[in-house]
Amino acid sequence: MRDTRESRLLLVLLIAIAFALITVDIRGGEDSPVDGARRAAATVFGPVQDGVATAVDPIGNAIAAVRDSGRRHDRVSALERENAELKTRLGSDDRNRSRARELDSILKTAGAGQYGVKGAQVIAIGAAQGFSWTVTIDAGSRDGIRRDMTVINGDGLVGRVTTVGPHTATVLLANDPAFTVGTRMEKTSELGFATGQGDRPLSVQLLNGRHKVKKGDRLVTFGSQADRPFVPGVPVGEVVRVDPSRGDLTRTVYVRPYVGFSRLDVVGVVVQAPRTDPRDMVLPAKPAPPKPTPTVTVTVTPGASASAGDGGDPEARNDPGAQGDLDVQGTPDGPLPTRTPLPSGQPTDTE
Image (tube, rainbow, N blue to C red):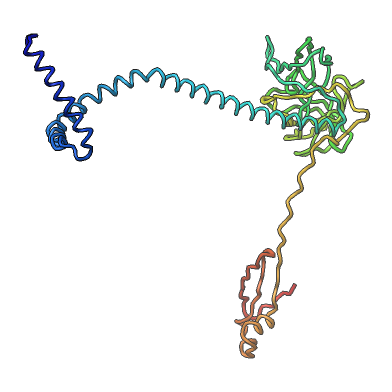
């Protein structure tokens, strides 16, 4: 349409009519005279509006998703970091509780043997060269650690200190082939020397070849002069195999150590030896043997059996085929009766 005087007048007229209709609609309220025209327009143009909205909404949602993707990505990253922190914290709490239990076990062992110990943590396994069984602990000369000190944990003998630095020390484990410690059998004075064999049981050479040894016998350290490198009374392990005696002066037995060398974490270095030999006091108490189940055996004579079974019938008592023993065997929870018939004329033993 060209911009002419008539078009301008038409535009002004349409605007005036629109304002007049708006004013009449507002003043009329619910009884507005244009309400019918509004409903008719909604009926005609409603489906068209709905179709246009259906076609346009996915595009709008996609645009909104692209616009919000950055914030969602940041939120997901934050949740992942929080989850990782919670897992780390939970793992740390479990490990701290485990270390607390190990330290408590070490303190109980030290208290039983009257050892003065310095707690340390294993921070490295193995040596820089060679194939020796060693670990490195985070305690050194500045913590009072010296060479040839005994190292224990809550289970027993771990090893001895071989090299000491200002802040760390190296411990030779008891299962190393170069490790040897004097031992003493529980409740006896039989001595021997235990040597490490890697992941196999310790080999113990008993000085008395005729001493009777059986599986389950336990050993402790005999101790060294001036308590270096070994203090007395530290649990070593228990016998799992005994070589047959051949009349030699010595005898070899094999001992499973109490300590699990592959899972060491917290250990204690004995910095003060006990005043007296604790002997077997540090060994854990042996479990009580299981009580045997009592067995009750009851034998009933033929006369009593017949009287109890036939209601006192004389013919039944005189019938040889009705004779028999009633054996009751079982536990106090309930006997299990069984009746065994006897051949005619065979005498009955009564216990």
